[in-house]
Image (cartoon, rainbow, N blue to C red; front, side, top):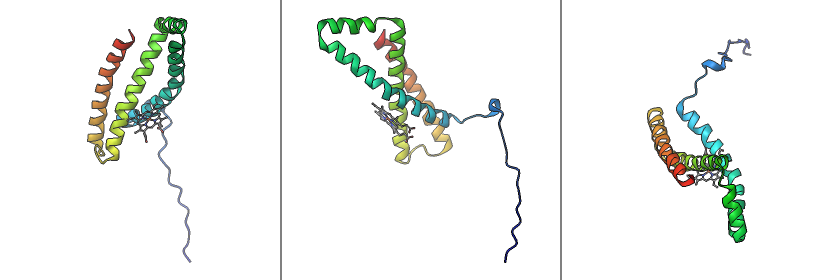
Length: 130
Ligand code: HEM
């Protein structure tokens, strides 16, 4: 019969949100989920806009009118950038599924490369929208 001694080890607690630092790879992962949700929601809106623009000449005119404001263009730019982010970081994710970039150093390096590619594509998205 073993004697059970309950030892309450004090666990490290950190509730000071200012000192909690996520590694870059974790930030990339969280943003990938966020960009997936943004893409999911925006598909419905973009399909509606496409449908409107293809319905009639008047429909095309009102779709063009909707997209004409700075606010809508900014949203469209954000949607495109989120999609590019999701694709680029998604491809990195698939490469990791194939066994690449699994160490911390290569993981961070591939995240930085992904961010750089997304930055270029974000500028490209701006060129498309404006
Ligand atoms: C309409 C297009 C798309 C939508 C709405 C979408 C949405 C999503 C959502 C909501 C998730 C779940 C995220 C999570 O659980 O953290 C996800 C995961 C994923 N997506 Fe997409 N996605 C789309 C296109 C793509 C494309 C084109 C790629 C190409 C690389 C891609 C790659 C991935 C990968 C690899 C995951 C798994 C990530 C993980 O396991 O953490 N997705 N997507």
